Length: 77
Image (cartoon, rainbow, N blue to C red; front, side, top):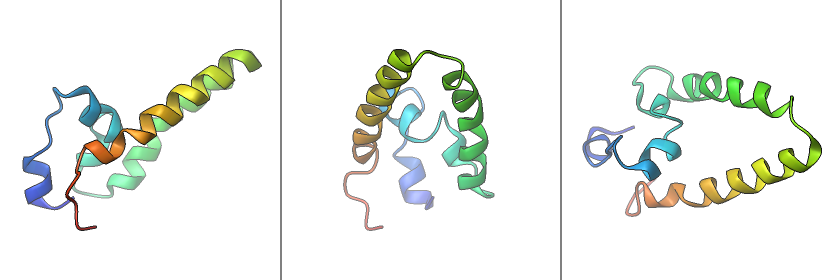
């Protein structure tokens, strides 16, 4: 992530916290890899729940993903 965008991100903001993979997206070296590693516990937890719970978690995740655009609304990426 570019330094100017990183300066606008606050980990105290829940939208930023979730959109950046609990902060793993701010790691300067291989942020995508660390973001994937941060997602592994969530994957393991999801594999242990019933189908109804899994569907509910999927819907919650979908809403969370839709909020990621709020992190950098004027991004030129």
